[in-house]
Amino acid sequence: MSSASAIASQSVALRRPSICCNASCRNAAVCEATHGGDPALLDMREVVERVGPFSEGDRLVQPDAPHRAAFAVMSGLAKTVGEGRVLAFHLPGELFALDIPRTQTHRASVVAVGKTWFCRFPRTATDALCERSEAIATHLLTLRRRERAFTRRATDGSAAERMTSFLLELLDRRRRVEGNGSSFVPLPMSRDDIGSYLGMSAATVTRMLARLRSQGSIAIRADGVDVLHEASLRG
Image 1 (cartoon, rainbow, N blue to C red):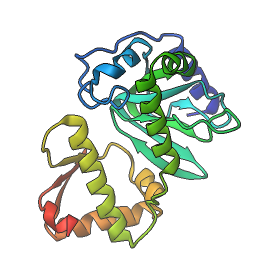
Image 2: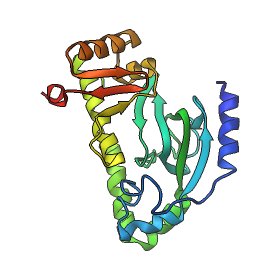
Image 3: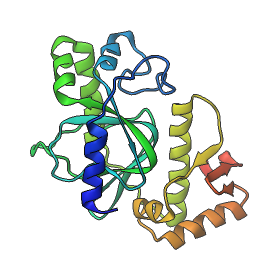
Image 4: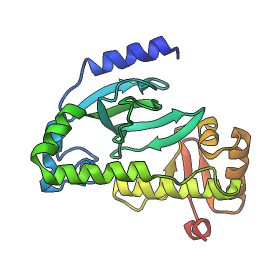
Protein backbone atom coordinates (compact mmCIF):
# COMPACT_ATOMS: atom_id res chain seq x y z
CA MET A 1 0.00 0.00 0.00
CA SER A 2 1.32 3.44 -0.90
CA SER A 3 2.19 5.99 1.75
CA ALA A 4 -0.44 8.34 0.32
CA SER A 5 -3.10 5.65 0.58
CA ALA A 6 -2.06 4.85 4.13
CA ILE A 7 -2.31 8.49 5.16
CA ALA A 8 -5.68 8.83 3.44
CA SER A 9 -6.96 5.74 5.20
CA GLN A 10 -5.76 7.09 8.52
CA SER A 11 -7.51 10.41 7.92
CA VAL A 12 -10.81 8.75 7.07
CA ALA A 13 -10.67 6.59 10.19
CA LEU A 14 -9.74 9.41 12.53
CA ARG A 15 -12.51 11.64 11.15
CA ARG A 16 -15.02 9.04 12.31
CA PRO A 17 -14.19 8.37 15.96
CA SER A 18 -16.92 7.15 18.27
CA ILE A 19 -17.14 6.66 22.02
CA CYS A 20 -17.62 2.97 22.68
CA CYS A 21 -15.84 2.09 25.90
CA ASN A 22 -17.85 0.31 28.58
CA ALA A 23 -17.92 -2.85 30.66
CA SER A 24 -19.48 -4.84 27.80
CA CYS A 25 -16.26 -4.65 25.72
CA ARG A 26 -14.74 -8.11 25.30
CA ASN A 27 -11.43 -6.70 26.56
CA ALA A 28 -12.87 -4.83 29.55
CA ALA A 29 -11.58 -7.35 32.09
CA VAL A 30 -8.01 -7.11 30.83
CA CYS A 31 -7.89 -3.59 29.40
CA GLU A 32 -4.67 -1.97 30.56
CA ALA A 33 -6.19 1.51 30.39
CA THR A 34 -8.45 0.72 33.36
CA HIS A 35 -6.39 -2.15 34.79
CA GLY A 36 -9.26 -4.50 34.07
CA GLY A 37 -11.97 -2.21 35.43
CA ASP A 38 -10.42 -0.66 38.54
CA PRO A 39 -13.07 1.81 39.84
CA ALA A 40 -10.37 4.44 40.40
CA LEU A 41 -9.45 4.32 36.69
CA LEU A 42 -12.87 4.12 35.03
CA ASP A 43 -12.78 7.76 33.95
CA MET A 44 -10.40 6.56 31.23
CA ARG A 45 -13.49 5.14 29.53
CA GLU A 46 -14.89 8.65 29.13
CA VAL A 47 -12.12 9.83 26.81
CA VAL A 48 -11.48 6.81 24.60
CA GLU A 49 -12.37 6.91 20.91
CA ARG A 50 -12.81 3.95 18.58
CA VAL A 51 -11.07 4.43 15.23
CA GLY A 52 -11.17 2.20 12.21
CA PRO A 53 -11.54 -0.08 10.52
CA PHE A 54 -7.97 -0.26 9.24
CA SER A 55 -7.06 -2.81 6.57
CA GLU A 56 -3.89 -4.85 6.15
CA GLY A 57 -0.91 -2.52 5.84
CA ASP A 58 -2.76 0.68 6.78
CA ARG A 59 -0.81 2.97 9.11
CA LEU A 60 -2.33 4.28 12.29
CA VAL A 61 0.67 6.56 12.81
CA GLN A 62 3.96 7.01 11.00
CA PRO A 63 7.44 8.24 12.00
CA ASP A 64 7.73 11.94 12.82
CA ALA A 65 3.97 12.37 13.08
CA PRO A 66 2.94 14.50 16.10
CA HIS A 67 2.39 12.40 19.22
CA ARG A 68 -1.25 13.15 20.03
CA ALA A 69 -2.53 9.90 21.55
CA ALA A 70 -1.84 6.50 23.02
CA PHE A 71 -3.58 3.44 21.60
CA ALA A 72 -4.88 -0.04 22.29
CA VAL A 73 -6.01 -2.65 19.78
CA MET A 74 -9.74 -3.23 20.12
CA SER A 75 -9.91 -6.08 17.59
CA GLY A 76 -7.36 -7.55 15.24
CA LEU A 77 -3.59 -7.12 15.56
CA ALA A 78 -1.06 -4.35 15.02
CA LYS A 79 2.69 -4.09 14.69
CA THR A 80 5.20 -1.33 15.35
CA VAL A 81 7.70 -0.97 12.51
CA GLY A 82 10.89 1.07 12.74
CA GLU A 83 14.63 0.88 12.32
CA GLY A 84 14.05 -1.35 9.30
CA ARG A 85 12.28 -4.14 11.22
CA VAL A 86 9.20 -5.14 13.17
CA LEU A 87 9.76 -3.95 16.74
CA ALA A 88 6.60 -5.21 18.43
CA PHE A 89 3.21 -6.83 17.97
CA HIS A 90 0.18 -5.47 19.84
CA LEU A 91 -2.73 -7.61 21.04
CA PRO A 92 -6.23 -6.45 22.03
CA GLY A 93 -6.38 -4.67 25.36
CA GLU A 94 -2.69 -3.72 25.50
CA LEU A 95 -1.98 0.01 25.85
CA PHE A 96 0.99 1.30 23.84
CA ALA A 97 2.56 4.48 22.42
CA LEU A 98 2.50 6.04 25.88
CA ASP A 99 6.16 7.01 25.95
CA ILE A 100 6.54 10.48 24.44
CA PRO A 101 9.95 11.31 22.94
CA ARG A 102 11.50 14.72 23.47
CA THR A 103 10.70 15.47 19.85
CA GLN A 104 6.98 15.07 20.66
CA THR A 105 6.68 12.84 17.60
CA HIS A 106 6.30 9.11 17.01
CA ARG A 107 9.54 7.21 16.43
CA ALA A 108 8.00 4.42 14.35
CA SER A 109 4.94 3.35 12.37
CA VAL A 110 1.99 1.49 13.84
CA VAL A 111 0.56 -0.74 11.12
CA ALA A 112 -2.61 -2.85 11.01
CA VAL A 113 -2.28 -6.60 10.50
CA GLY A 114 -5.52 -7.57 8.80
CA LYS A 115 -8.76 -5.73 9.64
CA THR A 116 -8.14 -3.85 12.88
CA TRP A 117 -9.98 -1.42 15.12
CA PHE A 118 -8.16 0.72 17.66
CA CYS A 119 -9.01 2.49 20.89
CA ARG A 120 -7.48 5.97 20.86
CA PHE A 121 -6.67 7.88 24.05
CA PRO A 122 -6.07 11.56 23.15
CA ARG A 123 -3.20 13.16 25.07
CA THR A 124 -5.10 16.34 25.85
CA ALA A 125 -7.93 14.36 27.45
CA THR A 126 -5.70 11.95 29.38
CA ASP A 127 -3.52 14.82 30.58
CA ALA A 128 -6.64 16.49 31.96
CA LEU A 129 -7.61 13.27 33.71
CA CYS A 130 -4.16 13.00 35.24
CA GLU A 131 -4.45 16.53 36.64
CA ARG A 132 -7.56 15.65 38.61
CA SER A 133 -6.90 11.97 39.38
CA GLU A 134 -3.74 10.84 41.15
CA ALA A 135 -4.72 7.20 40.56
CA ILE A 136 -4.86 7.67 36.78
CA ALA A 137 -1.66 9.72 36.74
CA THR A 138 0.21 7.05 38.71
CA HIS A 139 -1.21 4.22 36.58
CA LEU A 140 -0.23 5.82 33.27
CA LEU A 141 3.19 6.75 34.63
CA THR A 142 3.76 3.11 35.61
CA LEU A 143 2.78 1.92 32.13
CA ARG A 144 4.95 4.60 30.53
CA ARG A 145 7.96 3.57 32.60
CA ARG A 146 7.39 -0.05 31.66
CA GLU A 147 7.30 0.86 28.00
CA ARG A 148 10.46 2.97 28.35
CA ALA A 149 12.31 0.25 30.26
CA PHE A 150 11.39 -2.53 27.85
CA THR A 151 14.84 -3.71 26.78
CA ARG A 152 14.40 -7.43 26.09
CA ARG A 153 15.57 -8.18 22.59
CA ALA A 154 13.58 -10.71 20.57
CA THR A 155 16.73 -11.33 18.51
CA ASP A 156 18.74 -12.73 21.45
CA GLY A 157 19.49 -16.49 21.62
CA SER A 158 19.48 -19.21 19.00
CA ALA A 159 16.80 -19.36 16.30
CA ALA A 160 15.06 -22.20 18.14
CA GLU A 161 15.14 -20.29 21.44
CA ARG A 162 13.77 -17.15 19.83
CA MET A 163 10.89 -19.01 18.18
CA THR A 164 10.01 -20.86 21.38
CA SER A 165 10.08 -17.65 23.43
CA PHE A 166 7.96 -15.89 20.83
CA LEU A 167 5.23 -18.55 20.88
CA LEU A 168 5.17 -18.71 24.68
CA GLU A 169 5.00 -14.93 24.98
CA LEU A 170 2.04 -14.76 22.60
CA LEU A 171 0.37 -17.69 24.37
CA ASP A 172 0.70 -16.01 27.78
CA ARG A 173 -0.48 -12.65 26.46
CA ARG A 174 -3.47 -14.20 24.68
CA ARG A 175 -4.51 -16.07 27.82
CA ARG A 176 -4.40 -12.80 29.71
CA VAL A 177 -6.51 -11.10 27.04
CA GLU A 178 -9.01 -13.92 26.60
CA GLY A 179 -9.10 -14.93 30.25
CA ASN A 180 -8.98 -18.65 29.51
CA GLY A 181 -6.53 -21.53 29.30
CA SER A 182 -6.50 -21.85 25.52
CA SER A 183 -3.46 -23.49 23.95
CA PHE A 184 -4.02 -21.90 20.54
CA VAL A 185 -1.63 -19.19 19.36
CA PRO A 186 -3.04 -17.19 16.41
CA LEU A 187 -0.42 -16.05 13.93
CA PRO A 188 -2.19 -13.66 11.54
CA MET A 189 1.07 -11.91 10.74
CA SER A 190 3.24 -13.12 7.84
CA ARG A 191 6.30 -15.32 8.23
CA ASP A 192 8.29 -12.33 6.94
CA ASP A 193 6.97 -10.20 9.82
CA ILE A 194 7.76 -12.88 12.39
CA GLY A 195 11.25 -13.22 10.93
CA SER A 196 11.75 -9.46 11.00
CA TYR A 197 10.75 -9.36 14.68
CA LEU A 198 12.96 -12.32 15.61
CA GLY A 199 15.93 -11.39 13.43
CA MET A 200 15.76 -14.35 11.06
CA SER A 201 14.55 -15.12 7.55
CA ALA A 202 11.03 -16.26 6.76
CA ALA A 203 12.51 -19.59 5.66
CA THR A 204 14.10 -20.03 9.09
CA VAL A 205 10.78 -19.21 10.76
CA THR A 206 9.12 -21.97 8.72
CA ARG A 207 11.96 -24.37 9.54
CA MET A 208 11.80 -23.67 13.29
CA LEU A 209 8.04 -24.20 13.35
CA ALA A 210 8.47 -27.46 11.45
CA ARG A 211 11.09 -28.57 13.98
CA LEU A 212 8.76 -27.88 16.89
CA ARG A 213 6.03 -29.80 15.09
CA SER A 214 8.30 -32.79 14.50
CA GLN A 215 9.17 -32.76 18.22
CA GLY A 216 5.47 -33.00 19.06
CA SER A 217 5.41 -29.61 20.81
CA ILE A 218 2.99 -27.89 18.42
CA ALA A 219 0.51 -28.56 15.66
CA ILE A 220 0.53 -26.07 12.79
CA ARG A 221 -2.77 -24.68 11.50
CA ALA A 222 -3.49 -22.26 8.67
CA ASP A 223 -4.21 -19.47 11.15
CA GLY A 224 -1.67 -20.28 13.88
CA VAL A 225 -0.42 -23.12 16.06
CA ASP A 226 -1.82 -25.34 18.79
CA VAL A 227 0.57 -25.87 21.70
CA LEU A 228 0.42 -29.61 22.38
CA HIS A 229 3.22 -29.95 24.93
CA GLU A 230 3.66 -26.69 26.78
CA ALA A 231 6.08 -28.14 29.34
CA SER A 232 8.57 -29.07 26.63
CA LEU A 233 8.53 -25.50 25.30
CA ARG A 234 9.04 -24.03 28.75
CA GLY A 235 11.63 -26.73 29.61
